[in-house]
Length: 265
Picture 1: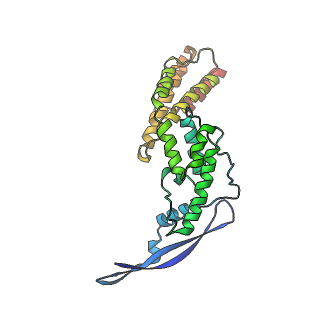
Picture 2: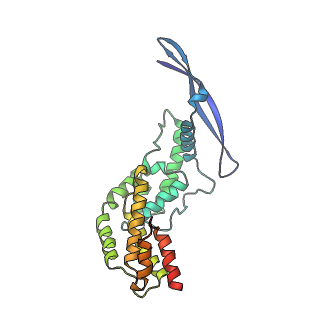
Picture 3: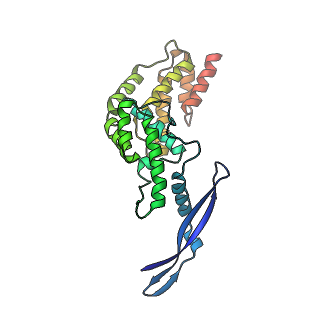
């Protein structure tokens, strides 16, 4: 089967400024088959999914004027033990720069022979991100990024080495919840320290899939609410009981506000 096509140039205004991104998409307008020519409307082929996918890929292969090799993406450097928090910080930073595809494998290396232009853009971005990684890890780990050919290889290397040690850390945090209580702390100080434990625990746990996100968030909210209420001083027994009687239950931030109101009275 032979596909006949046309090249369509599309102008997309960059939402970060006035620059224009030009995309060239090959839109098939007919298929030559044994039964004759079947014509296709190019505009129907141009679904929003096709355009968005192409736009995202094109933009991912662009660098901004503010991007430079010595740029520090995150405030912490990987030392091994801090991999969970470091990796999530890097994911946030690379997602913001639309470069997440270089570490999750969704942006593949183009053929230098068959796609020289695309390869040149990819290679430029790949080397820029490798430089960012080099400056985001401790010196003994930086050598891996310096000698690597692709960002994805370095990312997977770090992941394989450091992401398998989560169980002991999760155990220690969960153990802390058992004995953690308000004691002589103010409600604000107690809540802040408790939230620090929740956030730390989140860094060690894998993110749920999209279809599980809602159930995951609801369960997490309930767990945090119960831990917060269980650790409160006994002087808040009345407000704690009132919160537990609410239907539906408030989230932990709403419960915190109610307890704070009780504290200042």
